[in-house]
Each structure stands twice: as C-alpha cells, then as structure tokens.
Amino acid sequence: GAVVSQHPSWVICKSGTSVKIECRSLDFQATTMFWYRQFPKQSLMLMATSNEGSKATYEQGVEKDKFLINHASLTLSTLTVTSAHPEDSSFYICSAAGGRPNTGELFFGEGSRLTVL
Amino acid sequence: GQQLNQSPQSMFIQEGEDVSMNCTSSSIFNTWLWYKQEPGEGPVLLIALYKAGELTSNGRLTAQFGITRKDSFLNISASIPSDVGIYFCAGHRSNDYKLSFGAGTTVTVRA
Image (cartoon, rainbow over the protein chains, first blue to last red):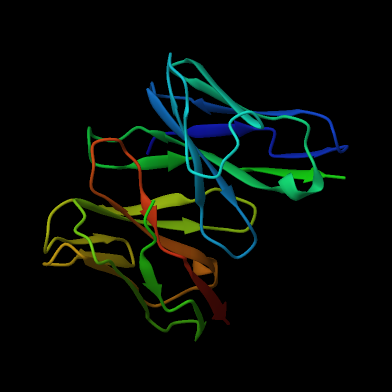
C-alpha cells in the first residue's frame, strides 16, 4: 500500500506555544489529506479535510484558528496547533487518499502524540 | 462522519481461536474497509471491499461486504499473539474520500 509519514511522532510542549505536525505522502501524490484526533480507547474523530492549493474544510466544532492546516504541495500537509493548552493533548493522525479513484481507500500516517504541559 | 455500529467492543480470546466482528449502518456504503491499529501507531489497511456480497481474504483474515451494503464482517482465523490490537471498520459512500468509522473492536490474545 501507499506510504504516509508523519513527523514528529511525539512532542511535548509548554502551554501557550505552537506545535507543527507534518504529514507526507512518500510514494504518491495526494490531492486530499485528512487530519484526525484520537482520544484513548476511542475511534478517530475527523477534524478537517486538507485540499492541495485551497483552504481546508473543517468539521463542525473544530476551531480553524486554533488548528491551522496548510496543504502547499501534493505530498505535504501540515497541522499547526496554535497556543496549545493541556486539553489539546491528544494523538493526531493524518491520512491521504492514495487508492483507486473514489474507492475511499485511505492510508494513515503513524500518528503524532502531543502532550501539552 | 457518521458513526458505524461495530461489535463487539472488546474480545479476550485464546491463541488459536477464531475471531469475528461486524459493523452495521443504517445507510448504504459503496466501499467497506477494515483497519488495524496497534498502540501508538496509525491504522493500517487490512482489507478493502468494493462490491455487495464480495468476500475477500488476506492471509488469515476474511471480510465480507454485506448484500444490503449496510454491513460488513471481519473474521480472523487461528489467532496468534500479534493479532492484538484495535480493529476498525470504515465505510465510504461519496466521492470525497471521507470515511465513517466504527468505534473499534479491541482484541486481546492470551497465549
């Protein structure tokens, strides 16, 4: 399957700082990437859809000014958690569409664990 | 996306036993996908199903796309310790790659 890589895999930061997480599709071009948040023992919660060259589409209840998404190229999307607070601590996962058109196949990154002190 | 009804929530099984889990929805899906997630990792695609009634195998894994297009099951035969993890079903029905996920089935294998 297609390879999606996230960086960093974990990060610890102080409250009030901003953290950037990168998501790269390594062996294919992804016009669409997704960002999810996952709490312990829960399913993936879609935060936003990242489209190359255009603004991200955020799910209801997700603050777009807090979770900045940039998809500047076909292989890279970034999620920046601005002015992070302890309640933002979570496991953030990206995915990219790399399968046959319109099949829904998504390939996920390894995830990034954010801990805000 | 819409949450799918996935069951069971968790399973504790002996090594060598078979495992079965399923997902149901009130809506029709065009594609059903099964993922496995291990602790601290992202989900890994196990099986993708594209047609109603389709039965697909991947090693010891077998999954079926329900004939009504509203359900799917995943079977794991002769479980081994490395089968431990959380298994998620996901459904897709539009052209935008957005998936709906089940709540996950946590599988624990006892040696």
